[in-house]
Length: 294
Image (cartoon, rainbow, N blue to C red; front, side):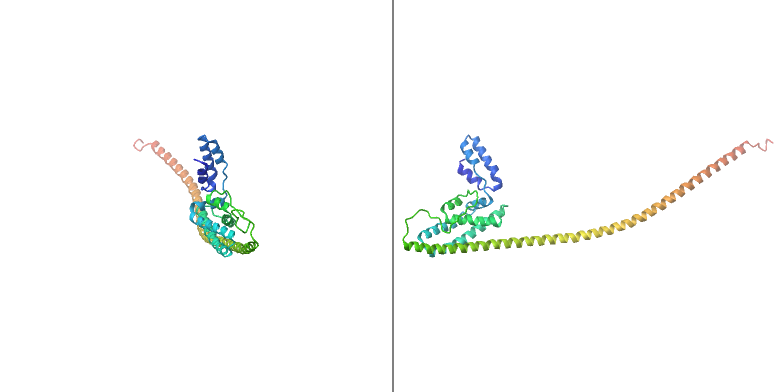
């Protein structure tokens, strides 16, 4: 394992997995008694979501990225040659290639569970624009190890090398090409703003649809809850009526029980008295002299 291999592996991971994987690789290098490599790996910084998303373009869409960076190389060359016509054509080609790759990056991020906000999408476009106009930024994007998004503040592509002072005619041509490029850059900025507004509108519409669906679902739930409550209320009312009637029957049964107990006690005492009298009579009969004895 070397630093390049470790970096390629780490910057291909989702941001949430970066730190644990980096620490594990640093520990592995330390266990292999390569303290220098361990320190280098430990110093690698976790990428932002934008950095991670752009890094995936070099891994998942190398052809589309190569197309965009090729446009950038040709654009820088046309700028050096001050070819206004080619600059205008390449600027249009650049807009289409940037939009295509940005769309692919956003789709990948969403499929990976890392949906991008409108601000993140704008930062991705700025990073791709920087890669188009600046050769160093292009190499960073191609390498796929960005920590964060890139930006480029100038209108013109960054020159690859310093050239001799141009002639007055060349300077005038350069001014014309610069104005053309500035107008193209302004148009591109307006297009980017329109895309941002379109995305914001689409997000708002999607949120409104989801809210309407949620409201409809809860409205149906409310209607069902009311129906269930009313049905149970009817059941409770019926049970309450049956309970009241049962209580009346219970009270009547209790009164009947009291009467039965009282009358049973009277009957028991009367039976006991009658048995006692019968016993007395039987004894009297036994004790009376018989007729033959008389």
